[in-house]
Figure 1 (cartoon, rainbow, N blue to C red):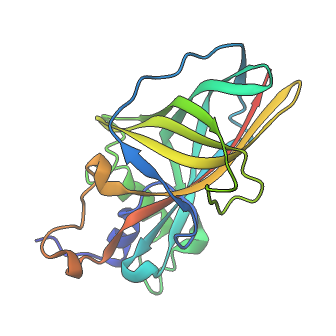
Figure 2: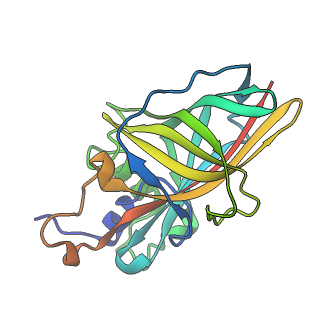
Length: 224
């Protein structure tokens, strides 16, 4: 059994936002990708961000950072019809403020980056990118749907592929469409084991020191 270091805890999480404050994403098997009908907008990689947050057991000592994203979003009659986002896993960077060498055995955020990119987690040399392809976009019904996103407008479903595993993920989002711009904001929580990211899960589950949950926060800006 591998010994878990403070650094390893952080690694267990791979994609996103803070203290498990995201909407719990619903997951199912891979679904048919929606056709990108209408005008296609290009995701601005310089302003779009995918933030990730991972935790130690019990939600302690969160580790967080960002991954660069690009892609396309399609709009018809003022509504998003589809889209594809590419996540550059080689761009993954851990925020330095989330790793204190004084309490992590001398390990730094750069050490965490290296471990997350290794075969223990993303194996970026073999799988340099992750993708999210929209399968459906529905209206958010405030009467029955709940979200941590103030002013949520839609419920988005899409196939999220990490390494060689694809899982369909559904989460609330705030979508705004103007003449020349599309913005998509969301904050949701996924379970890393759904994608076979099982590092640190040997033995009895009650003894695992790395949280299975990862928060993901999307802030997508797309332009004509």
